[in-house]
Image 1 (tube, one colour):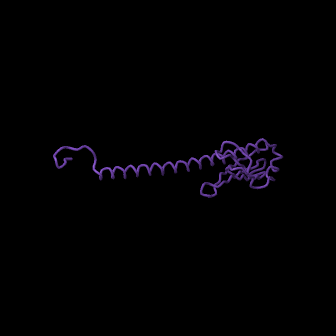
Image 2 (tube, helix red, strand yellow; image 1 turned 135 degrees about the vertical axis):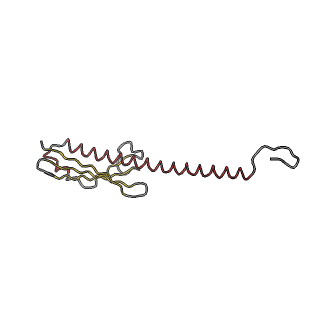
Image 3 (tube, helix red, strand yellow; image 1 turned 30 degrees about the horizontal axis):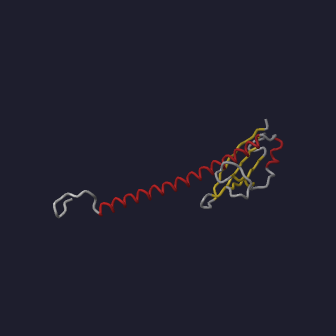
Length: 144
């Protein structure tokens, strides 16, 4: 750019700086939105994995129970609360700030055929938007 005196001046005009700042602002806004989405997705995935672990543990508990005693597992009160710490790293006593999951186990003896017992475990929890989520795992255990 030439000034009135004819000497060249280095630099940017005010319009160029404003356009560059606007583009930079949109990029930063996009990165911020992506970061928030990633955090929500990671939290959901960790809770879903914890729910699947709770269900697997219940199925393993049933598999380690003698076949004749399986119906007794079904007498547990429905909606057994299972609580993890905020990082979903370890079980904690319910009542402290925690992620709370509810486990329900249904046992149907001699189903679908004689000598088999069908076990279904449903684990529910609330996501960040207080929407109910669930994870379900089913298995059959043979008498023989």
